Length: 91
Image (tube, rainbow, N blue to C red):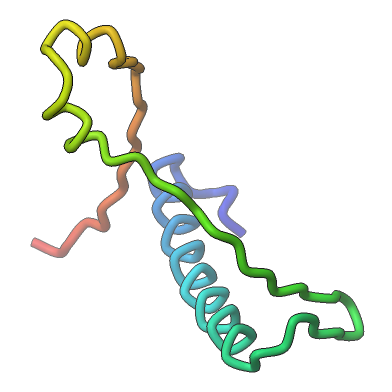
């Protein structure tokens, strides 16, 4: 279906479809959590809901205790590739 489109148009079209699917998945996930059940069984899949605890590290607070050199020693740099698509509008 999308084979005759340019790479830019294919990327944009697929990205928009992905956003719609992600919104639908979030809605269904919220409905599953709202049931309060730990396990839901379907014809094609079983879904298990579990709770866990997460600890987070407050980097900004830690920086208030560290020297600039210590912060630099603990800082990891990496290259990030970002690809964005934006639909063209009629002029």
